[in-house]
Length: 284
Figure 1 (cartoon, rainbow, N blue to C red):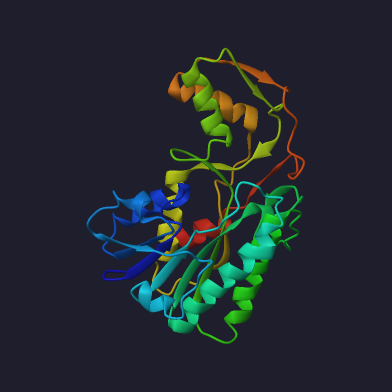
Figure 2: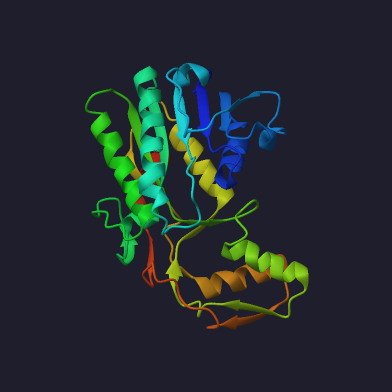
């Protein structure tokens, strides 16, 4: 791991900023990739920032990113609109073209973040052995990219980790997500917080823990776990989680469960099977 060169796309995003912080704790050289370098003005003197738009690929992209040993690929446009056709009409081909350019250029290690939405409407504990059944354009496009990369490995040799992210929360999250909505409502002094019935079961991790798992997987020498869930492995009700946040932060606001509908693109109860993640992290 010492002396490893790591490139990170999506470095200025929600997860990317936390991954960048985690990488700083390891003896690696980091190239942070972003569409707007101004967003990484505080990245630190030890981080090389490269401004790059994946929609405008360069033939020498591997060289431009300083020939990394490992690429942690978090970038993805069009979120949080999971139902937009943009995900497979525009995002999927530009993502694949960029990653293929990196592999053909000489990249030997790649970690890409997938999504639990690849599992679709399947309920219960979701293991990596399940056949993906995505039911929205975002999940479909992510799963298609994974399949494309697996075909690409038939032509070029590189290690691939496909890290399926479940739900997460923390600083820097999009304002439309549950945690920042609750935090903002408390900050405004709202008397009531409207929410769904809260009985749905989900799998949540703090984004800082997600970032640690991503970095540990990426920095393992010769790491090639294939598809792996990044999750807690513990189902928690959304209502229970909201109450937990209120207790942890000593926030005071009245909850109004049932005032908003349940999401129609997710089953009522699903969470990640974490056994494969634990095996990989413990075998170090």
